[in-house]
Length: 175
Image (cartoon, rainbow, N blue to C red):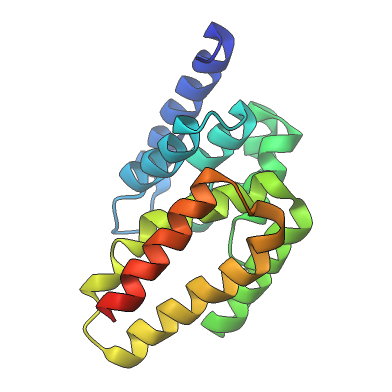
């Protein structure tokens, strides 16, 4: 069970997320719901509060006009660093290179960043089965496998990583 202060911090992040998406959100997908699911999957396994807070905010740099300095001012340097590590570099136009660079950046940023990316991919993987094009589906599986191979050494034995490995098995069978 989280302390009252940690619970307040998480609630502050939820409010901040909703406010930023409402003010300047530019993604037609349900960003708030996705971000809350990602954070709750980490909270369920009692990962550190900073990781849960950053998970709530992980898409703000990509999907709103929020900047890293604002996140750092509101939530501190550690949360801002985790959010930065989990944000795609929009200047990289090739989608495969973009995710490779982001995954590599998460690895360099450490376990917290990898945990958030794991939860993010796990939540997004539920939509993979909606992809009808076999080549596109294979590309998503390749992306998932690249991340799993990259993160395996750092996250082996972590329950959220085991969830991702199990999801991968299901997706490969359905493929």
